[in-house]
Amino acid sequence: MNKSSRRSFITESGKAAIAGTLILAANNTQQKEMKDMFIHHVYFWLKNAGSKEDLDKLTAGLKKLSAVKTIKQFYIRKPADTNRDVIDRSYAVSWLVFFDNGTDQASYQTDPIHLKFVEDCSFLWEKVIVYDSVGI
Amino acid sequence: MNKSSRRSFITESGKAAIAGTLILAANNTQQKEMKDMFIHHVYFWLKNAGSKEDLDKLTAGLKKLSAVKTIKQFYIRKPADTNRDVIDRSYAVSWLVFFDNGTDQASYQTDPIHLKFVEDCSFLWEKVIVYDSVGI
Image (cartoon, rainbow over all chains, first blue to last red):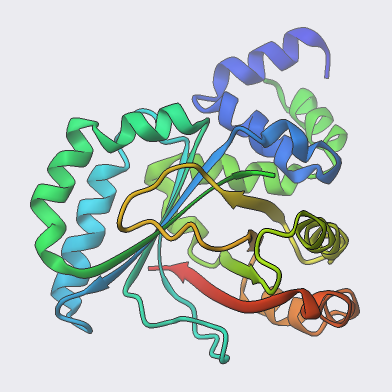
């Protein structure tokens, strides 16, 4: 691709920065360049385990939460059907979020959209485990 | 970008398929298209907690493991410096892997490279928790 085509491609893509980061991610030899990326993985257990209604409320809340500007990538998920001794499949929803760095994650914690999510949805869960990670 | 430029771009990128998937991921309105993507997140606790040598052995093993063909994206990580009640930062290493689907993940479990990793490295850890997730 020549330079102008590349510029055009980048302009066209609303999320070009992300795409670029993730192309790097896909290149094993360049993983070092992603060290700053902050991965925030949250698992929620519902008070009413098995309630489809509460699950829907929580996922709707997470969709709204995804509007936080510092979020670069997010995944709202449920347990897969894999089942081995080492697998924990007791949670209801997984919320996996990528930030550019720890500063952006800290800003997310106090973002009004995040505070509103906690206010609106925290009655739904009985347990939350968070795993925050950065490059080694 | 015109068609031929796009083709050129795609040809140039060895991981174009991944990049395409992740551009979709970045677009909230298109999340449904990623439902099949299988996220496999493993947390390792070392027998010799705090041993830099054992940490290095495990991360070296994971780097070799990343050669499994069905792995679309992977992250080898350590706990961030965040510290709240809900955060579990007691693990030593996090291994986050994206597969196109559950079939690819199942194939990874029995891949000779994976079996060799378990053979070479399982003496290092005392606990493993796995969270497998798919789209809701």
